[in-house]
Image (tube, rainbow, N blue to C red; front, side, top):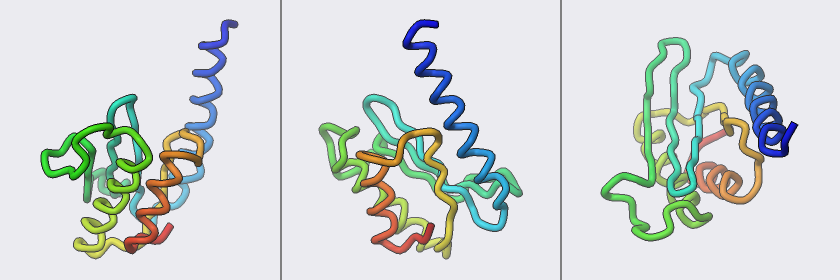
Length: 121
């Protein structure tokens, strides 16, 4: 197997392992983060009903950082925004679905900012 295929297989295994543990806990909504090379996206989802409760992304027009929307500063700002929106809708406890991404760098900055602004996970 070539290196790219092995990398994708490892990512998918990690993603499924995380998802299986999270789906066992249905009492709390799931905060799912996704990222591309240029942007971040986050949703708080109620899996029992299949509804998105709160969402935010770096593509929004009122996002404060206009340049470099995929770095640690943007991730930190997005964590702050999603926490404020969730607390406004009385959502304080969530399960963090890192979606297979390793917990360091941008993902860690996002999680720390969300915790500092009122979310518990």
